[in-house]
Image (cartoon, protein in one colour):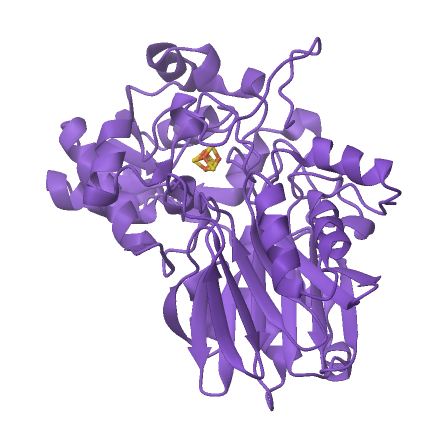
Length: 478
Ligand code: SF4
């Protein structure tokens, strides 16, 4: 019997999308139930990782940690949260982009070292982790997990000779790649963002303290207001003396992950000055300008295509309709169809509304195609309902390269747009038209900030170098 496991190719919950990375949350709020607030914060970030969840809490003297495999409400009970008492907490939800899916890789990671205790939660991937791990092992370090997050903890612990600020600074200089980190000591909450600002990290204010989170949607959930984004290359330390910020490295060329706006982030989040829902709507408007098509209705592939479909309808004047209903109750224990029932997977997740679709020329808006394994099934669903024409519009450019900064976009060999022309893909999925949003059109949405984004999975322009030698033909992160 095959059960749903997030991250497996062709699984029903993530049919053909880049895999989400991780979500981090931190809170400094004396007098508040910080464990419970962190639980709610992680709940709001659940879309960023479904494999494991964890919370570490500090009370000024000691640090407690509880973590496990599963969704946030599966890992924590009310009793467990009641036992996590303190003034400061950090939390993490994980989908593994490095390190296998094992409990030992669940975060936060907790370490005792000469200067005290440190817990860390990480979103992103380091690009020099192999080199750093080798150096640390040569110096006697022992690793319990296969995550690059453990490498970061070791770098901090080994350079901390009583001055945490110095150790964090040295760490930021040594580690390369993508990282948004929340760190907890017995009496401090720390946030760090890499100098390119790949992964999001924002800072919020509560009446009695501060919150940091991967997305602003998690701030609202715990009643915090958005103060600002943590700047690329910035370290923020919050303790009984208040908030201290220092810019360790001048921001390099900003390289915010543009896929956060296309697919990953919640529409109610604002990241680096742009609301996700508004950006998605603008993507739809640009799609309509780039692909003027005669059609009767515009429908989204729910939910990630919805905002862009509304934008397409707005600009084209073609009516917006809900033509596909999504089953929202497919959980982790869902029993997958067997291989010979694989076609059922899409039908279980998406149900067409025949009365809306029959006899129509349809523009169907989705966010992206990765391997191209499900689009043909969705088009077939529409055809079965008597749809006359299907024009598939995607609010991203073709994905032709792998990501090395914390997103699992699949191997380059598996990316359909790396192997086939748009016309060949159109034929393969059985659509009458296929249009990808142009990279130019996508970047123009951000106006004067258009050069502040990583677009490597579309154009191969990697902001931080990745080396790809090797006989295996696979890229490495050294
Ligand atoms: Fe985001 Fe793509 Fe850049 Fe990865 S390569 S950080 S998915 S834009």
